[in-house]
Each structure stands twice: as C-alpha cells, then as structure tokens.
Amino acid sequence: MVQALSFTNASTELSRRLRQLRADHWPHETITQKTLANALGVGVPSISMWESHTAPKIPTLTRLDDYATFFATKRSLTAGLLDLDELTENERTKRDKLARELYRLHEAATGVSAPSENPVLPSFWQFPDGAPILIVCGELLPEDRTRFASAADYNYMQLSAYADIDSMVELFGHIRTLNPTSDVRFELAPRLTSDDLQSHLVVLGGVGLNTASRFLPKQAHFPVRQSDDADGGRFELTEDPERRFYATFDNDVLVEDVGLFARTPNPANVSRTLTMCNGIFTRGVYGAVRCLTDAVVGFKNYEHLASRFGNAKNFGLLMRVQVFDHATPSPDLTNPATVLYEWPPH
Image (cartoon, rainbow, N blue to C red; front, side, top):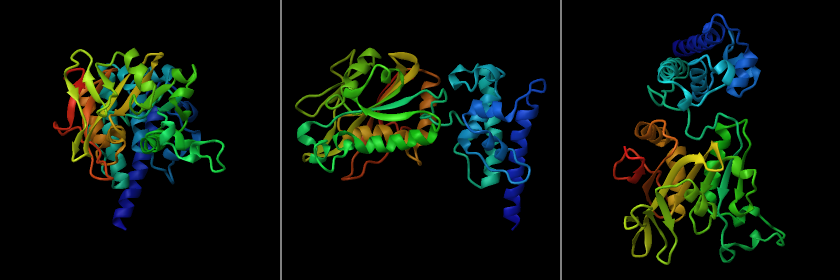
C-alpha cells in the first residue's frame, strides 16, 4: 500500500509538471491544450488526461521526449515540433535536461527504469513531420511464388508475392505504432508512383528482388553497392571495389549474412528521408531491421549510432548478421566485431 501511494503521488507530480510547462514555461505566451495537442500530434483529451489533477494518465516516454523538444525552444510556437537536428546546441542542451527530468518523474510514477539517463531521440523510426511513410518491398520471382500469389486463385493472397515478408511485417507494425497520425503503407517496388517517391521511403531487400535497391542508392551516392552474381552476391565499396563483404557458409549452410543499414535524404524530396535495410540474403535484411526495432538492443543501438554519427543526415553501415538455424539474433552494434564498415568515418 505504501508503494501504491508513492506511485500515485509520483503520477500527480508528473501531471503537475506537464501542466506547469504548458501554463508557465513561457509566462508571456498562452499555450492552450489544443495548441500543444496539435504540435505533438495527439488529441486534446490526451493532453487533458496527462495534466489531470485527480486521475492523471501517464504518457509514454516518447511523448515525454516530444514535450522536452517542444519546450526547448520558442520556435516551437510557430514552427511546431522541430527535428532534433534543427535545434541549436543551446536548445539541445535544454531539451536533454528537461527530458532527463521528465524521465525521472516517469520512472517514479511507473517503477519502470528509463532506457537512458541521456536520451538522444524518442525513436529512430519516428517521423515527426507527419509526412507519408512508404515501405518499398521486393517482389518474388514467378518461380518462387505459391499459387496463392495469382489473382486467379480462389485463395489469392497479395502478400504471397512479397519478398522479405518477415522484415516487412516487423517494420510496418513498429512504424505504425510510432507514427499514429501518419499515412504508413507498403508497396512493391514495380508499383511505385511519382507521388510515392515523395514520401519517407524505407527500402527492404537486395538488388536481386527489389528494383528500388538498385537505383536509389546510386542516386543517393552511397559509398557501398551490392552486386548480385552466381555466388549469391556481395557488398563492395564504390571507391575500392576490391574491398568486398560476403556471407559465410559452413558446409553450404548459411551461418552469417551481411546487412546494410543506411539513411540519407530522399533524392526525390530532400525534406524526406530514404532508409535502406538490405542484405545479401533475407537474414541480412531482417538483421538490419531488427537492430533498431528489437526491444532489448534497439535503444542501445540507436544511442550508439547517435554517438558515432551525431546529427549526420547521411550515414550507414555494413554489419554481421548471425544465423542459427531458424533464428536470427538482432545485431548488437556496440560490439566492434559486428560492424564491418561505416560511413562517414568516425
């Protein structure tokens, strides 16, 4: 009972602090619940419940990060919620300090430890501008499809033609959860429209099955490229083609794949992003996805990326992806042995 009372008091303290931020953080500005709700991409009832005197609802850590970013700069009042790379160094310092304070209040109210004393970003897969997000998938070769991939079959299933379906399902659910107000879709690369190319693009799969994996990295000037040849394919450096990275086999059994993870401005719309999750085989693709969606290592991996690349808009790496029969452990990017190559240089 003492613990329950403590949690209740902590919840009230968190709601009081959120209410204080909105009402008093900038004394000469009037910030209504509607104004704040619009900026954070939530409904007014959510703000009201988070600020409730009597029965407060505890917001997620992601929402608390949004609070910290909003109240780090007065520019939020006209520009809305900014990306972290749009904050000045002084604003970033204020943002991180406030985020740590809100994290501590959240931990006291829930008993759940925050993932970091110095949070860097709410999530790599959050796109706060609210723009459309499109996952671009490869298409299985006709000879590799089941009969259900044919619209003529009574049991037609459209997804039967999709390559890397494990990776697509994993990433689609993750992105939808983190971007509830955005239009999040998936589509086969051959079906892309001109409007589709203006979205935040997330390209899944290698050059053998995904045509987008062939031309988009060239347009974005990636320092690595993928070749699809008789031995199963490889990655190589564009400026040093003799430096190559292959999957590893033991008696014809795949034991280690190579994954590519990269982000850069979308060449078709530089205000949006292009993210590549690629591999020589499906396991490499899955490892590239899971390195930042995994509940155990995902946040640690993102903190590592932020420490390595800071606010770079164009970065990426090649990683080892271990394979154990049906299991594909999520790569731990903090392990130096996992990372094969990265750009820009640290």
